[in-house]
Length: 108
Image 1 (tube, rainbow, N blue to C red):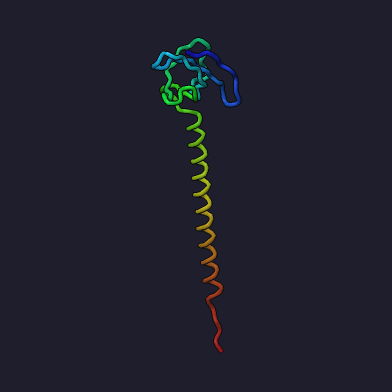
Image 2: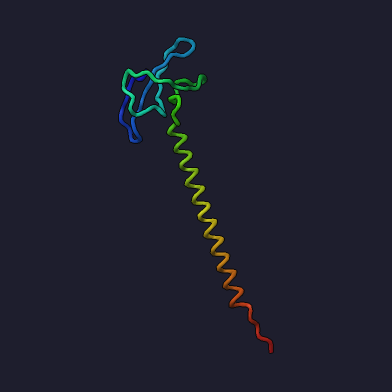
């Protein structure tokens, strides 16, 4: 059950409360919960039973942490690809220029 919804820099911070198998109730921040949830709403979540009071995720939604990691990975991959293309073009031009201008030798 949603116990708190607060505005945050990246959407809303949603806090949920849920029972463990032992019957103990735990409250944790839901990393991927829908921003449209309101206090008192029921939501299906997934959590780590070894550390239940850490971040939990709403079932069927992608964690913001995973999206952020993917975004950084995609940006790094694109950047590495662009650098590789630029280096390959530079080498091709360098090789083309060195063969056309430096190949003539004069003999006495």
